[in-house]
Image (cartoon, rainbow, N blue to C red; front, side, top):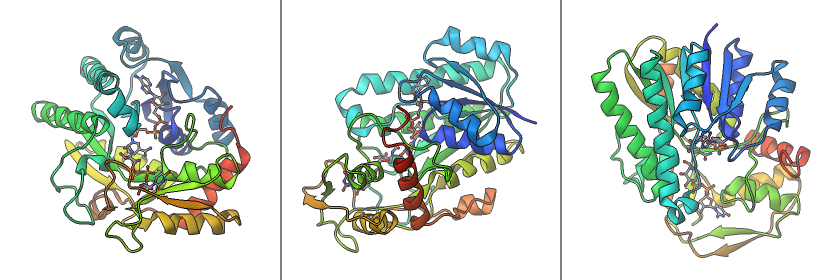
Length: 337
Ligand code: NAD
Ligand code: WQD
């Protein structure tokens, strides 16, 4: 049995990963400052897995309180989900993003070094590819970013690349997630954004349930199949399983590895709207609005490397992603509140 520290484990992707890890017999310890999550998540994880994971409210930016967790536990690996993730907010408050995302990671890596923990999975993002010159996107494509949030991800990737060069015992996986949607099929955990959602799927589910009147489709003049933006949506449970597979890889001492985690399929906004209409049995009213600043035409992954090296292949399609997003929304009209 491995003991795994999960920073940000109360959040959307972290909570789903905790479930998959517990289901496979791992011992999990969550730290989270609850800045974007709810205590209720622990109860929901317990309902799904019949096991209550260890949890401490810790801000990873506060070195001393974070260190206590390392003093009290011997970890085999860390998955570092903790971070702020809203692109628009990062443009408004760049220092908040640089401080939270970078300081938490500095503290984590210093503590891993001090307590001799040598396996780290880092939540990076497809955002590090900026506007790619072509699709699908391979891991060796040039990296450039367009907003402070993305810059924190690229800076952390750079820091971890430099660090791993001089610490050969240190194994690190940079996982570049594409667009996670969906929820655990139980309907007990899912994405719970604060206020009006920024991202497409939670916005659509709130339209479907009647909390928001209508979806704004940002642009219909992109060079895509129907003019609306194309993304690689991946079911959050598939993404969570990607972390389990990645840990198995790290235990074999590969040094630094980088993987795209997506499905390899691109769907347009209007295709997602249509699939959600079918899943909900409801009309999803929408209006076409101007493009959103910073958006790109198309973004989808080539996932051959993750398939070859860790056996990763997403098993859920758009239909299941829509079904489970809707199931979560229906069962939890106000999220965890
Ligand atoms: P989330 O906001 O649901 O989860 C992040 C968790 O980290 C939250 O529970 C929050 O309370 C916690 N946290 C933030 N700062 C912290 C700190 N200083 N100390 C302790 N806890 C802290 O986000 P998510 O969607 O689950 O994303 C997880 C990770 O994956 C993030 O790093 C995010 O940038 C990255 N990512 C997310 C997406 C996406 O679309 N959801 C895509 C690519 C990458
Ligand atoms: C998807 C598509 C929008 C909302 C973001 C981050 C990225 C990563 C994943 C963290 C686009 C369109 C959206 C709406 C719309 N996160 N849209 N109306 O922008 O691809 O990626 O989340 O790392 O860094 O940027 O995701 O869900 O916001 O948008 O028409 O109300 O839906 O224009 O084409 P995005 P998204």
